[in-house]
Length: 414
Image (tube, rainbow, N blue to C red; front, side, top):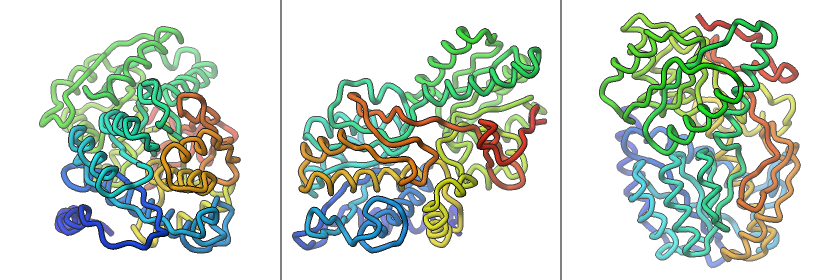
């Protein structure tokens, strides 16, 4: 099991190795992967690397599971060439992400990029990829603006925050239909980055369209040392539901500050982010009980995806944890990218992008509860529907839609 001390101690050695480019066999296919491996987001990088390494292991070796490239070794259309990943540390800094993406392309000669968790970093990496005509697969970065930049080398297999927010309000509407007076007021709590700003813009539009009322609009500085003022505003407004958009350290601070100030939200729905991360759940313990999050993946859906149990067992063996919404999307992004490289038949950016645009993968051949994977003209997969999950008894479980629920919803959460 990873501890903060182990992560900090080990990341120096890991990131020192990230810049090295060992001699490689000519047949290797190089892919550049960008995540934070130092700083407050280091745990995100640690777990992303485990998920992606498992995907590469499945691609490079032979496994009897129904995933693309699992049954044969390597990439058959490239002479069974193996994939090798070169990792880079963007430190949650967009400008660092830009320079690392350029280094991976110009020095390491990667044929594609994948990452980056932070939408602000994905925004600049996607521009670099476009300039060099190298495909960039956004594994889990969810800002809607990313696929609206007019880029032909950007691809996102998972949902974006507009899709997630619509699912949130469909969920709220379903509850309101059962009990018309149960949900009238909403409080917004969001950070001042691309992630928070895009989400709040969409949610304000949906609040107006769906007939709810905003009683608190709380925007805060990301990585703030204190959230006391912001929590007091929410406490005074006491909305029926708080919609929260935060990364891990801010999510921890929010929950702990709310307890200190005696504020118990009636209900809290998160835009995923930090509220699902193992570091958050470890830090806040039972204070997370009842929190709801949107998701494109929940481990309890294994019955519908036979390959999921195998992959989750591999991830648990390597990390001591189950896959979550982020690590599952990271795993699947690498599989989808490798499948496109294989269909392209060559490790060249324009040909890989062409193959990605032709992707048509049935959901049954993924570990996700998706209908399929196809990309529209903007590089966005539009054939996916998010679910809602709630934390309790030490894990998140699906609570909506009703036909996928594996646990009864607790509403209100307190």
